[in-house]
Length: 160
Image (cartoon, rainbow, N blue to C red):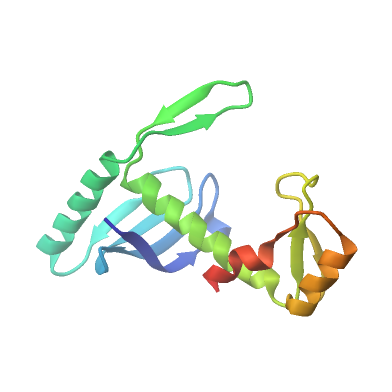
């Protein structure tokens, strides 16, 4: 089953405990329903669209699919592991988060080259205020010979 989100609208000013958003959700390529989260820690709400019976059936089909997904594990700082069975709220919220991350990277990468060295911490990126191109790639390889660079521009270009 293919679940995707489109038309994501984030309202940052209303986000408190989670992302405040509205979007359309597609199931197997068909617009199935709208999803809405108010960003206050509550659940994501799913609103059927017309024709309602078909939309409700797609919501139910997506919910059943999510129940078949493998459990997700989260590890807390003290080593405690929480296991969670994904549901439609979890899947849609995750897709929205991925979409927003991709949009943020797309904005950040305009005119800049972001990269990491193997010793850099997770989330720490270095950058040059120069667009990424073949010349910049050669320059980075000369500046950091023998280093395995992670170049964000290469990773995130698939979302452009």
